Length: 170
Image (cartoon, rainbow, N blue to C red; front, side, top):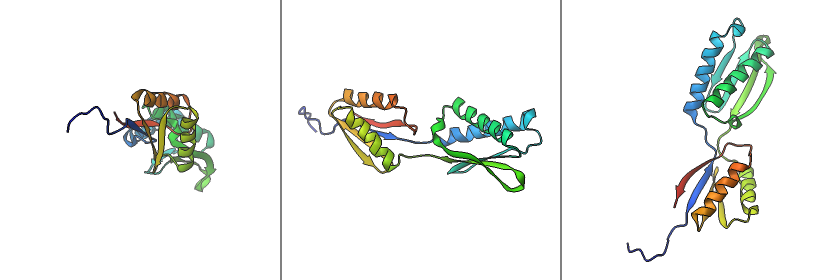
């Protein structure tokens, strides 16, 4: 194919919200080990359960539940996982006088959030095109510099979801 100076493709990248599940599993395993070994958790039978969609923390007392949640959050942060992936988590009574907190693992960009992010980008007056594609956004521009400005803008906006920038194509 001859290079006639005409570019067929505009530079693009995708904005996604993904969870590094391996890092979450590692953080949960570390938190479990810490809870088993810590003196203040002895006899509270505090448990942490992880599934594909949620993280459940259960304990005999609400004070120990809060401490266990702090341990798991600390481990997530140390492993570079944003706490924005955790949704919910209100303590509720469980069977046998125990207390349970259920956290949903938030992944993907919902339609309403995608529209909000698209509006933020459009309001910045940068010459880019934004398309919602399922649970991600595709951003296109004629120049790479404009894409880099969009990335910088979205990093400045402290959004309720953890955002990653992938599939950068020049």
